[in-house]
Length: 83
View 1 (tube, helix red, strand yellow):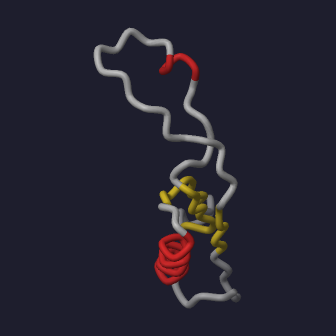
View 2: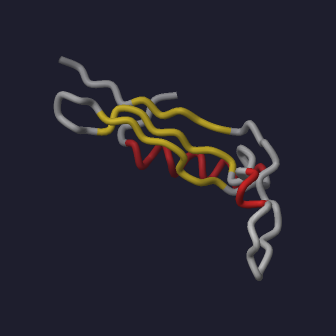
C-alpha cells in the first residue's frame, strides 16, 4: 500500500490493530545520513519481543507482570523520495 504521509501509514496500522484486537507501539526509526530525515519506521504489536532477563531477576519491590509474548505483528513504513 502507498500512503501520502508517514502519519497516514501509522494511523492505518493503528486502526487495523484496533479492529484485529491488539495495540501498537512505535518500535524503531532510521534516518538518512545525508539530511537526517526519517527513511524507515516500524510499528509493532505492543506484545512484540521479550523482556530482558536481568529485569526479571532484579530485586524490585513491585514486580511488573510479563506483557511481552513474542508477537510477530508489525508493519514497516518506508519513505521514498523521487528525485
